[in-house]
Length: 164
Image (tube, rainbow, N blue to C red; front, side, top):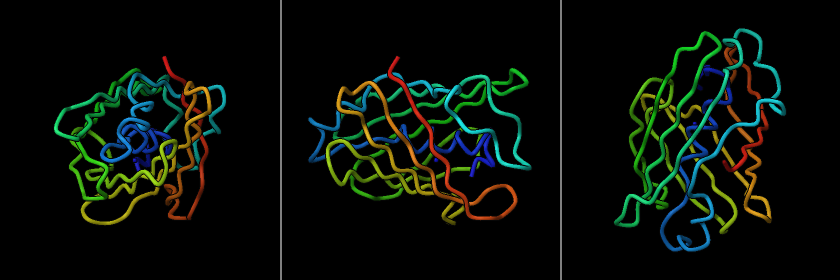
């Protein structure tokens, strides 16, 4: 989950992909798979942010041992690809995010089987909170990102992710 972002959205990607595990693993496993940001429904980047990316894809898989692994690939407007990944549990404990970006840690919880809450941070400082709600058919994630925009002002962004 900010990424002054390849768009504020990329953080959602990061956070979003860092889905739930643990006690709700069976129900939350609906979050496993490949997801693509629906750019046609994404709001334009905030003032001062880079142009909207060409695409953002995340793949979330079972890493075993009660943990999941998520990888996010962003193809920027300039065609350059960035990659981030993390392996994490649903225990709310910090897990490292590796790769290029403005997020280096996530804390993931799942208050119910169809909701993920991801706290994203950089260098120990909170960057954003990402809340993802899975649709009833499991084909869409509606994501709300609350954080600070490139201008330093608090902002909220919503996104739609579609199962590929």
